[in-house]
Length: 366
Image (cartoon, rainbow, N blue to C red; front, side, top):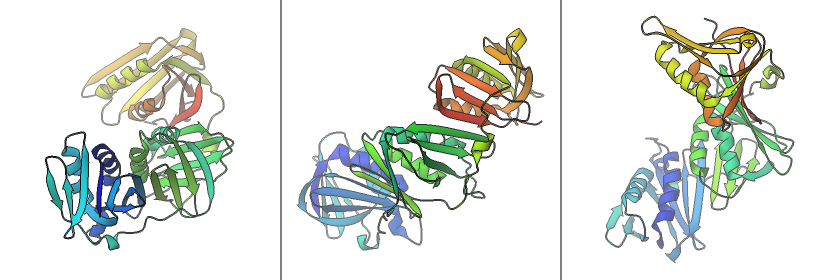
């Protein structure tokens, strides 16, 4: 194998996929990237057996071939090279020799024949959407997943198709986030559960990628493919909660206020709320009062009142303020709506004028 390529192209691709490589003492090949040259392109593969990725771009080819190199070594080396210029890669004596205008580096390799094949998702339902809409869908909800392996169906992001929309949902049973993304054609496929740890890698791979992605849903796997990028993930076996039955259609108490006002108040609550992160909301619509209170026996007490638009019934209710703060990254609107249905029902948050994102938080009973 001998090729020449633009430094920025291989550095960008390797930086996106190197962390997918697994650390397995029994299978050291999983800690490698497979570099394969054929038909005028360099293909770079990475896998941890749970998630696989293939990236490619055109290069100047002197000789085709393939080599497996440690992902951390190649990624770390490329990231430290000066920007600009071309890089020459060549296999010499079983090692990978990397040459630039001012450097020459020899990297030890492993047997490329041991590198696993990246699987195809197979025949199934397919839908196409802009890559950044796909990334936004995952980014809007992934933080609501649990990280516990006790309930794999909750340690995942659920994705399903509707009438000209793709829906992304995640929950840890204490809060739930739902994001709807419009598509040009009907997206008719049932729930697929993408493992939480894979979602983080998928976001990193496609973040900043321009172009459309085709989602292909197979029996046990789902793939995401675009020009020069292909990712395939295992699908979690299990049933995602039927959350639609707890999504309220109307509210007994509603509050509309500036998002930044609530963000600032909840950050202050973090100082005074104690180890349980409990923050109280008090609403008196007749007096136009919306109040946020936090208190700790060891620190003190803080109360903030807001200018807000309120309607409905009076209510006092407590929440874990950290759960609420998490969702603001998914709400671009300057103003937000808070909807309540009593002390035992979830709080609903949405951006004013934006029904594409909905966030539910269960109250604290203590």
